[in-house]
Image (cartoon, rainbow, N blue to C red):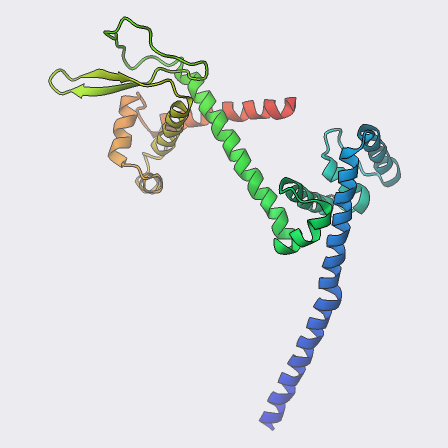
Length: 283
């Protein structure tokens, strides 16, 4: 009797598995194939739109039609990928957003409408393709913020009180460049006098200066956690820094404590974000 019950349950489970496989084949897989084909045609429409000499008039007409007939509002700066997607799907904002993201990834990868279906399948479907845009945008935003932070740091360092001053023996003017804000000197410590001696003047390199700004920001970020041993240790370990050297770096740069480092970091971030916001608004 127990064997019959077991066989009956397993038989029923196998039948359900077959039904599910049939469902996936007939509805989900077929549905996805049809959706990918529609998106390929949407991309074709986008290609025709952006290559048309009447692009401005066509965009205006599409926006007007969406607003007057379907109550779908678009902005003047709405991307053409989003506009054609909304025009075709007339779906919820979230759905149109997802589909337009897929088109943006395809365009960024040089994919034409004839290859879009294979492109989506090879990338693992719509959701995985869409996530690539999120990842790329996050990287781009991080780079933009880092660049803005470095620019703001340059500006602030140009006005802070000097840590010291030096007069070089050479009568010749130091080399400079329009894209380099500071003079880069190599110094050594004279243990007898306790003074730093300039031993070389570096070539004015924007790459070297950018690296120096990046290093300063990393030190400042670590210094802001120096009042919490656990967080400080974790941060230094993550960045490959020596905790004692960070404390010495803070004292050398007149940063007395973690709170001061934190305020400096927040000030830089606020100014950098404001600059990025103004750039986006102007664009």
